[in-house]
Image (cartoon, rainbow, N blue to C red; front, side, top):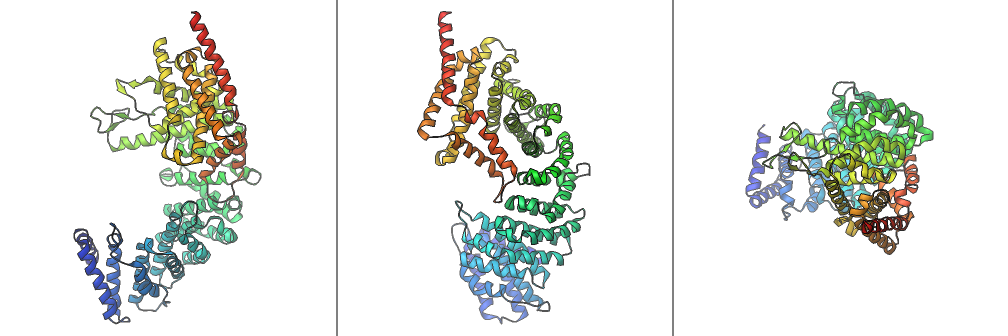
Amino acid sequence: SPRHCGGALLMTLMNVETDRVAKTLLDLTQRVFQQLPQDDVNSMLSREACYRALELCHNSMIAKGKRRLNFSDWFQAELLPILQTELAENSPVAMRAMQARAVTLTQAYACSLKGEEFDAAFQSIAKLMAAPDLVTALCASRCIDYLAILSVQERESGEDSPQLLAVRSHSVFALGNAFALANRAESEECLRVILMCVSALVEANGVYLEPVLQAIAEQLPPLWERAGDSVPIHSCLLSVLTHLIMKMGYSTVENSHVQAVLFPLLDYCTDINVVNRAETLLEDGLRLWLVTLLSSRVATMGSKLTSMLPRLEMILRSGLEPHLSLKVLQFNSILLGKQVVEPLGDFLRELLVTLTSRVHVKAKGNGDEMEDDGGNGGVGSKEKDVGTMRDAIAALSFADILMQLFPDLGYNISSPAIGKVISYICSGSENGQRLSVTMPLLEVTLSAFGRMVWINPNSFDEVFTQQNADPSQREMKIVALVKTWLGVVTSVSLATMISKKAQTIRFIDQKGTALSLCSAICRSPTLTRVAGADIVEFTRQLLEVEARGNISTETIVEVACGATRQVVGDGPLGDAANMTAEMLKLDPLLTVSLKEALDNAEKAVAMSSSQNSIM
């Protein structure tokens, strides 16, 4: 249309002659406001056109280190009075268009609003969600969605910003108008916009909405009934429920109105037998499932969670979204016990091997593209590599936690996959090409291998024996692995340098490495001979760090539990949190004495040295 063409031309001119075009546009807007009659229809349309132009050019007006528009003053003088005007259904179309444009313009410049102005804008626009004009109401819904998310992003260092406080003070009113607007909306797109607004308000408020949880929950079943087979509406309902449960905890999961939507929605979104369901809703459905597990109490939710296990097995066997389905299996195992995993033992063993079978990215000869195992380069190959890497990391992380939960069962399931990855890493090259292993993959592999070695110290030698290398090559690979391992756990990031908590988490990784390698020293003469001294020195230095930092077992467990809580929101967690804490308190890689491990390792190294001197 001519209007869209004019907008594109204006933005082009603004990029070429920013200062001149900005000044001209501001002068024109000012003249239209000051010289034309305020209640004239043509004048309103002219003002609306100027506002549209300023909205299109908002980046140039307030960015690039120079503010060409004082939005704060303009908002107070022109926009706020328009937003606060109560219009009837029979008000002139131009006036209603002007009000809708004022809403979208406020959204475009929202970052420039100060605390009190943000409060006034949010309150006024939340009120406009009940405007008789449906276009204005939907524009207001989009704007409230944006302002709510913006207020969360403005939160700094754990402190609530004035913007977030403003959102919370008017959110109950805004939610009421949003649900009322949902009853007026007929199209799928309109309902989607409103549900995204509800989701953003829930995210911004969290437990502050607890007093009105019942009222919110009662609105969900009618919305579920209206969803039909609409993918966008189901996706929005997933978002709303995810934020509700994540932010308000088990009280939401146990609410009967929420359950009337939650479990049918999970069943709908995870039904992979339906064509295209896996491609459209499965990932979000698994995320909601995971949040539900984290916020569930076994006494009240155990039977419902158990009834969903056959669906989880079907998803796992299909190989879809393993980075999430394995996490769902993990928390089911924490809540419901070993019986969740035992029947799947043989399948999981093969699955972990499959997911970790391609753990690297090979460079083509010219170094410009990535190449998969079939030699096919290009964008599709890169996407496959990313997916494979993510799945491999998820598989190794699951293997590590499974051994932590159930050492014997976990070792039996996980050790083949971990051993193959370690063998691959130690091989050094493939087809004459140097192997490239990402740091996240290396970290999770070594962590899982460390727990595997702790459970069975003989497994360290077994991995290298299976490579069929001659003794000298085997020793070189052991030395290289230990050097790499110690280098990974002692590397220091910026976050580690400035955060006490990050330092403790790094110490947890280092302690697990030290305990695992010290236990392997006591069983492996080869490891003791070629790398024992380095391991002993590393453990000795770590013991000094523990003494200087006054790092107690209780501190380690507390920080480790804190790390597990980062995946949820503000609400009270379910039983998984306490069960995880109890598991960590019994984890030998957190609780065994470093001093005891060091003493045993030093004895093994001393004995090896004396035997070598005799020989």
